[in-house]
Length: 183
Image 1: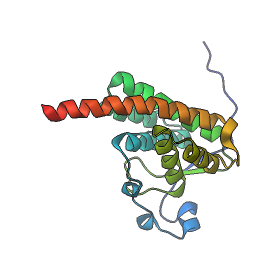
Image 2: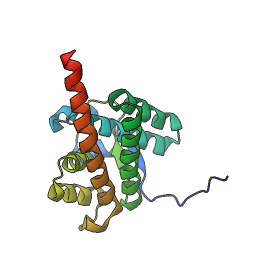
Image 3: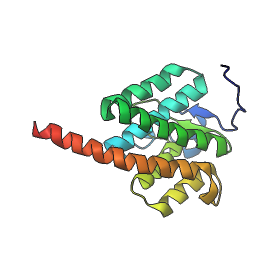
Image 4: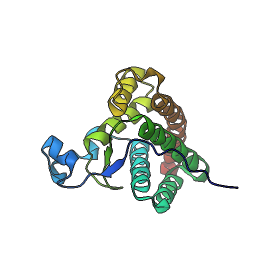
C-alpha cells in the first residue's frame, strides 16, 4: 500500500509568540494577550483547544508526536474510545479550516494560559457548536475562513459534526465526573 501525497492546503499554522505578527497586529505582547479563562471554557472546550494546538504544531512542524499528545490528552479525559473519536472530529474540523482559510492561522503552545485572536474565534466556533447555536457558529466560521457566507463550507459541516459529537461526549464526561464525585 502506498501513501499518496495530497495537494498542500493554502493555509499555514504559525505559532504565536511574543513579538509575533499576531501580537503586533493587536499591539500586545504575549503577556498582554487575554487569558484562556476569559472565554469561560468547559473542560471539553479546553480539550478541543489543546487538541487544535497539537494539530497546528504537528501541521507546521511535521512532528507526529504532537498528534500523539492530542490522543493522550483526550484518552485521559474521555477514555480511549471517545477520546480517539473526539480527536478525530477536532482534526477533521481543523483540516477543513486549513483547506478553506486564506492566509495563516496563529496558535499558542499546548497548555498556554494565553489565547491569540485566531484561537478566540476558534473557541467561539467550538462553544457555539457544542451549544448548537447555529447563528453564532456561522459567524465564527465566517471569521475563521474569511468567507462572508460559510453555509456551504466544509469547515461549517465539520464544526457541526464536532458539536454533535462534543455534546454527546460532554454529557457522558459530565456524568462520569458526577459519578467520580460520589465515590
